[in-house]
Length: 361
Image: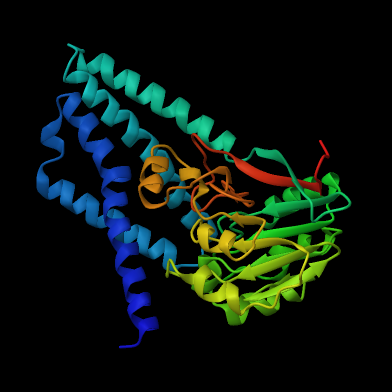
């Protein structure tokens, strides 16, 4: 079995383990817990619980395999709402260990708080925040505005959402726009959903994320290139005093270390590396990168996933300076959302980098 086949099967196993755990946590656990607290545990004996769990998994499988957007949307949004209720139920169970709480009043509180947080998450999933950063370098003699998008996830998000994003980007007046992976996440996404990219009004560049690989690069790359987006795959592009470098996402933690030395560099340029995962920054700085831009983490998207993401990645959101010497690393929380259009404890972000000479404010 080839390394690529092993990687694919590993991804499939991890995905379905996640589905099994997520299905129980989001769809089954809140129902079982609330039934027990109300004194109706006889409604959910273990055969019924297992049957419900299996039914949920089957429904999720059918929704991901099917092409009915409305059905898939209902399933994934209920998963998002279920995770909110899961968190509230876990907190309530913990409080019950130390406080004498009447279960009927407790359930009323769980349902009220869960519903309020779910509505807040749905509202927050539509908001777009503009985050501004100033970076200076002796390599630069004039200002340059770079705008980063990441993890837009068209497929999970609609073409109308991309139009909103592009309108906000245009208003910022960028000199260049970079998309650090996961622009699309569904095979059915076509030119109509991505048409807004034609109206960005600035040179636009995409580095490959994990979801582009899952969907299929043979389809994704020509599609986005037909809309005027330059795909940087182990390659670079010079714009004035800036050299943009793109490296494909990979499962290997050594991807930056392996690929960066193979890419031709232009001496004296301010080097910006686009790499989807927040990994390899030490190799990037050692290789002369001034600014590394990543995404992938979504900053957890829905609390408490930020804790789980932090267990996998030490950098999940924000600007990180190099511990020694020059260089900065920014991890975007993502411009869109994967799965449910919900955010709790995170936000959708368009990131602005105002680059300029040393001494500029």
